Image 1 (cartoon, rainbow, N blue to C red):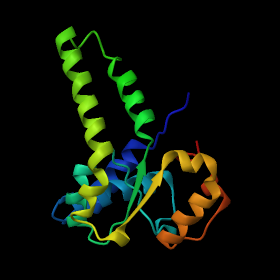
Image 2: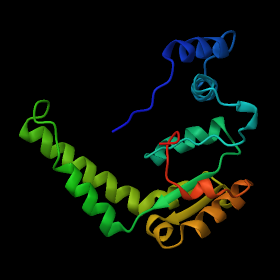
Image 3: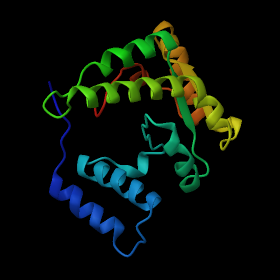
Length: 174
């Protein structure tokens, strides 16, 4: 019941300032957007050592690797039965005001195909352009069994000090 908000004018002026005189590439824009958000939140950016970029589509990771050759990918895998069930259930939820029944069926089948594809090919695809040390994979369900062990493993892999705060699922403190 809450939303994330920053001072939009501060964000905009920070973004313009960071990009001023820079060629606007995928890399510079991604960094500038994240830095501008941090500036608008009042964060001490010098104290940050990791940038988290959450993608649901592994196809974008190959381009991300071009821009950030040393990136690390935390792959979250789900039990295929749970993932496909969730996708099927979500596929039935459509915006009737925007989609007719045929479009709704196409939307649902597209989601089903993508879910199956991602479940069965993601790790193989990542291996075609990432080194083995750049990828760590977790089963989502394993984190529910021992979250602290999982987060300690992630923090070690990223070279971060473990913190109890890592055991709380939050976004921007919410």
